[in-house]
Length: 116
Length: 112
Image (tube, rainbow over all chains, first blue to last red; front, side, top):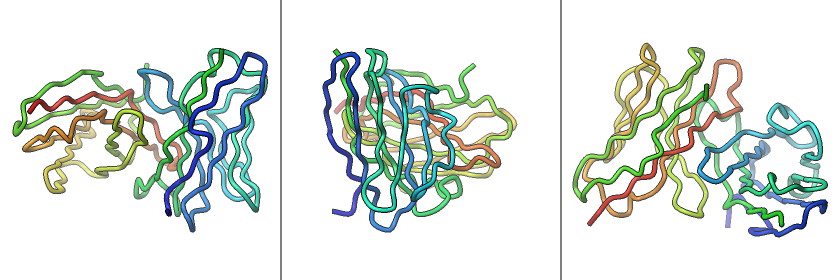
């Protein structure tokens, strides 16, 4: 299976807990992106990472959210002290190179976070 | 004002008809334009990209771009029930190719 793998697919947290979402890009891809999708809304860019580097985090909320893509292992999106407004589907995507030139963004199946 | 706007639908067409999906964008430096299809509960998948004014055809799909009017459209000929999905329009901007701006999507229902 060479697709983008995300886990968990569904995550339930109570307010104040932490959520960790993991993403393994397609084999050979070194560019990872996180997008958030609220119900009835489009995908909103959060962060773009390459191995060990955050390239663009302009879409990340200033507090409680962080992302990493270590040299070894999956990319992780971490949400601390979750609130109900964090309930959404979080999609990870990967690309081989710079996406805008080809649109070759490959998405995972998403992680659906529900905050009680 | 949203960067990318789409009519949320649903757009209902009978099987075999042409489905026309539209998208407008607000930023004149938008450079690249994409259509993604998303089935309910699934991940978006790229179906078309277009970079210059005019039409681009791929099988039953035709993307149309008009930069002067700032709109991009997707035509689906001979619509099939399997085309029923949400279609997301996305744009990238000059110098910022890694950030996609997505519309909220148009839901298409193709009735058998």
